[in-house]
Amino acid sequence: MAVAAAVRQIRPIRRHTERNTSSGSAVNTGFYGTFRPVLHRSVRIKDGRGIDPACGTFGFMIAADRHVKDLTNDLFSLSEDEANFEKYEAFTGGELVHETHRLALMNAMLHDIGGKIFLGDTLSDAGKAMKNYDVVLTNPPFGTKKGGERATRDDFTCTTSNKQLNFLQHIYRSLRSDTGTARAAVVLPDNVLFADGEGENIRVDLMEKCNLHTVLRLPAGIFYAQGVKINVLFFTRGKSDKGNTKEVWFYDLRTNMPSFGKTNPLKKEHFEGFITAYTAEDRHSISDERWNCFTAEQIGAEGKNHSLDLGLIRDDSVLDYNDLPDPLTSVEDCIGKLEEAVDILKSVAIELKSLEQTEE
Image (cartoon, rainbow, N blue to C red; front, side):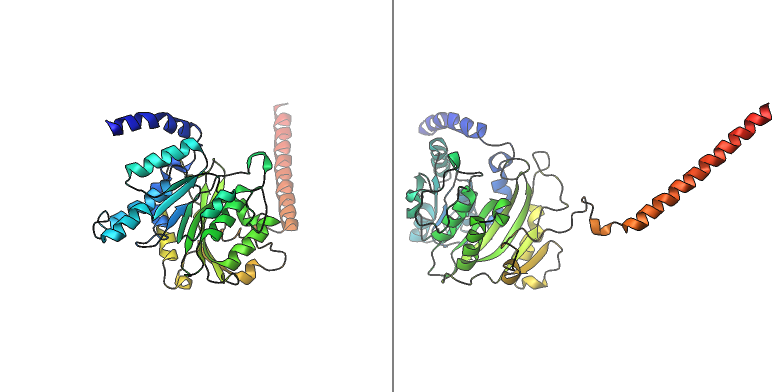
């Protein structure tokens, strides 16, 4: 009876959330399930504390919890203390919107997760309490703060109204720095990779404090609205604040791929090439045109803006100027064909005149 009553209470919240979720979002496409092979590269048993600081309906944490339970016979293979830790402390979250927060709590309860889900703005001073985590998995909200406001956190090095850039600052600052193993997987749109000004400063800070080892470039419309291109950044917090990124590997799962959507969803098998490359003991041994490496020196070269908008292979649907023939040759070829056409037309005209004279 209690569960039935709770479900009746949560239905209007679910409808509210669905109405306010774009048709191409992760919630509507079931992408959390599809994305599990990638999430599993970032989550292991007895990992310590994990959080999604922009958890929405808690989908990432539920997927991570399911992964751990699949590996531990629903936690029964763990000791009592270990099982209690996984249930009550391993997976937590933060959410700003009241209705979505209530749905996240219900979702966690239905999946037997007892971790705390904070209600509040992660980008305000309340977010300072979210720190010293071992794992962060998140898909921050898209856009700028309401009215173009900047984050009110006074512990951020860079100030910007771009929410994704502010969340990125929060995430790498929330990872513990004493182990050298705390890590994150973060879904971000393309603009974070190349934004100048504070965007460049934040990327530099990220690559100094963390080992940004992998960027997965995904098709448009998977998490955000149709047409918004996204990426997953994988990084590990270093013990020091300088020189942690030596090279960054990019996997292009975007170019020359089919158009994904409700009728053609992104599936587990689409990630097989990426997972093979990501988990390789020697990444340089992988022969895959979609898998490319850039050193920190290449990324930070003068005039490059520390841009991470890299690693995309040649798009077969786009005409490459370098493949075009020499302009002069093209013009001469066109003239030759036009002259040939004129000669043919002259011949036809002569034949027609000849026929007219014969009839007379």
